[in-house]
Length: 225
Image 1 (cartoon, rainbow, N blue to C red):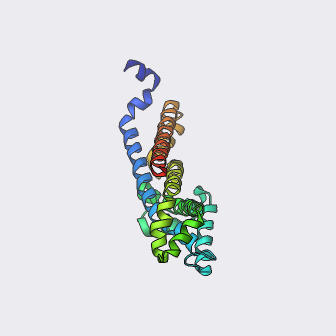
Image 2: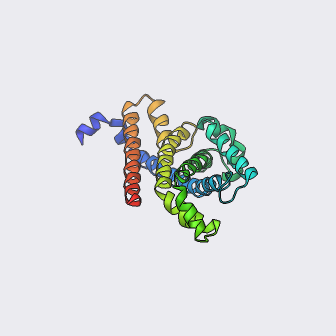
Image 3: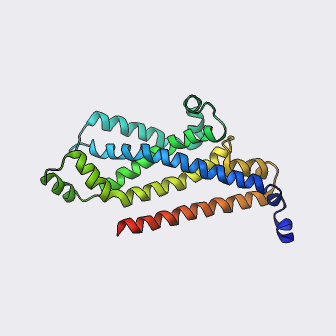
């Protein structure tokens, strides 16, 4: 314990705050990742099935969804934070803290999920889809029983990448009062030149990323088999 006090005096002193910041980061990532997936997966499916020559071809719908996804994907997260302030305030009632951070995190990650899902579904062998059509399956049956089932490993991989990106975004949100480990590192580490806090916070973020990556790869292997 004495060695820890010498190496990380500020971390020991602020350990309860570090634990709260860790919980806030996990909460932000889980909530925003879940909602982003619930929004992004259907959007990705819609992008595929409404393409020209596909199950539910609809050029106007495909064009609108594609453009919206591209707009939000092209904006750097720091700019997105400020660009959607009125929307964030309308939905969450505030632009700071956990509630204020979750809204822009969803807007940043849902389009990313949509493109990942689109990419995964486009890799499905068209012969499988044609076989389902030949057996008289309806478009919605094909979406549920073929596209989603066959594309599930790719969808899981895309969500894993999204969650990893969200961890980084949550740290950025902390720089503008979004809470979590990013806010903790800036407030106590960077502003007061407490190196041990910066180092420990960085290590924790790296450990979270590695855990998510490993868990995602585990699920991917299970689903691929």
